[in-house]
Image (cartoon, rainbow, N blue to C red; front, side):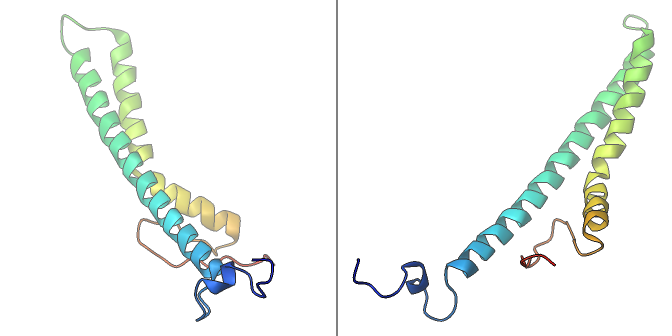
Length: 118
């Protein structure tokens, strides 16, 4: 191994698809997966908050479990439902604002190019 004249990482694929290309592909897949998982989690949380909010509002009208906090809990559940349902759009807008309009964050697969800065 000491006598080798080339790096092992360069010997992976001689057609120009070396280690850098593999790392680029892995990071792209990680970002795509992360965006899809985050969107799915937010939609599930929106559904849970909607069900909890409707249940709390229904319970506030029931004679046996009537309490003043149930109405506030129901309204908070519906507001959180709206925030979680629009979460992916808020993240996309924040990414575009932070990058000067260069970023797109979504649940569809896209190619991401990482550059050295500038």
